[in-house]
Image 1 (cartoon, rainbow, N blue to C red):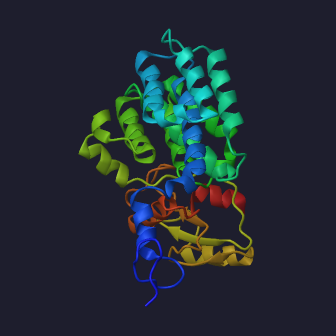
Image 2 (cartoon, rainbow, N blue to C red):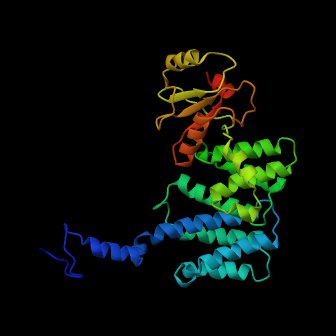
Image 3 (cartoon, one colour):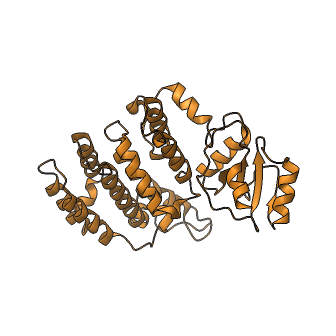
Length: 315
């Protein structure tokens, strides 16, 4: 029986599985993915910088979020050329103040250190930045009207993320919260619960109750004014229509060279939400189709939840 020359383990093929597992366990495999990890780390840093300054104000807790990032990634401080980035951040925070010029200097360095899209496409990179922005906004445990306005502006400038989770959901929640010009405590708590899911922040740190989390789980959220392309796209419908039967909707979609299936699959592009008796973004009464679509979106499937009104506007 042929054995591995390095460890003496019986060979099954050309690669020694024992050595492979040993290398995995002692983290030698990390050298192969370190550049991609660094890219993700830089994207998160850019997001945090944007998030803590998105309302054009900065407090001690938000400064602490940036310091926490530095502490969590201190190993990079010993690695060229990233040590320069850490020196700039540390020097900028010596007076516990981050000026606009200092922020722009850090962002400029981050862009220089990126791998020019070698590891992540633009959507993935920007979603990583969005996660960092959420971390920055939540760093002081509060969500203000000014922060939501700043986040909505950032989302508007990054429409390439529309249809990707959680862009549509966040945009809809922000729009609903800002509709009356006041962010109520209930709206703030709902946003905290949703943001913490995406940014992977412990809800205990934000005082999110189980009732709020349960409420969040029962809501599906429509994209706002989505672009709907019927030809060669798959549609599904849930709820009750104000204008037509489900069969009539299916026939209309097919007439416009689209496809219709009454169940959600990975091929589904749009889930139309019947608008009768409901607001444009809360669908707790619809049950499993919305829940399934939301779960699939979280797992990277690009199903767009659209309000029936937007569907009729696209015809």
